[in-house]
Length: 169
Length: 254
Image (cartoon, rainbow over the protein chains, first blue to last red):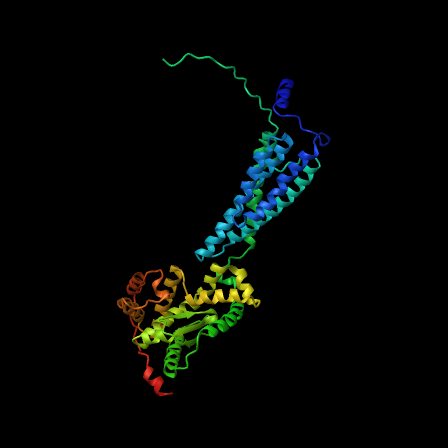
């Protein structure tokens, strides 16, 4: 049992405490949330630009530290569902206008759910950005643990010794 | 496992909010976004632009004909969406267009082109169809968005007004809208005891004049052939009896 616990602990890197995280890393972690807002505005009405920006930001910053990696990844994957919902909403609206279709109850229900999801996501992101600036971890539901699993995973690279082989004859 | 439980919570929450708001909301059709009252305000602004661009014709005989046809058509209209008004404009264009709030503008060129008053009635019934179905509003909501239309309502800038007016004059409706207006015209003509085949006849007569200028509202999609085919395939009422429009009598009464 104890051995299993140690094995589990070894799977992930040690979580840094706020006093161990340099200001530069905190700012980079905070930036992953705030950068997305600017990109979101630029991406309207097709919310795809924010996704591209988030992917670029993620790949630039992920190697800096596990802390920055975690926040950049959380910001990136947590905006996937809202972006997808927004894209669906835009297409649904355009389709209704274009084909002169009725705006059904289902449409308005979806519209309300998407607005609420966006507002909720916005608030969560602001809170996460503030926490990141303070050098704290902030876990979103589902996306937080998932980002932790990826960012703090202790990757043990298998050591490959060079192997001499005979030529193909 | 905990992660999947969290994902499930998020999905269920989203589903519940969607469902709850679906129950709470009411379905809306596109033209509900602009009320008839709001449309009247837009109509005033657009009308002043149209009248500054085109000259109203004072030709008595043409105006009398137009009025005779209008009265005859309105008799066949059970529940008019608007108080339809027809305005005769100077110009050789074979065109008529429906603007906001049931204001229909007819160029003299169109009347000259019609061989019978019934043909004119058929074309105007088609325009009334666009009015009854609120196609002008729907079209503009689709093309310009609700924001632009509300800018016009609040006395917006002249560039937008010009843009809207030009879109109205060009009257380029979608295929579905043209078919709807044709179907409406067919029924209206029957209700007004006018042979609906006059609409087909007018289309055919235009088509036969190959060197003739075919107006945009007829040349654009749906193809004229298809429209003629559709109208010809429609069944007329069995007890239907055509009453010719007595234009001569109206003219004599001036």
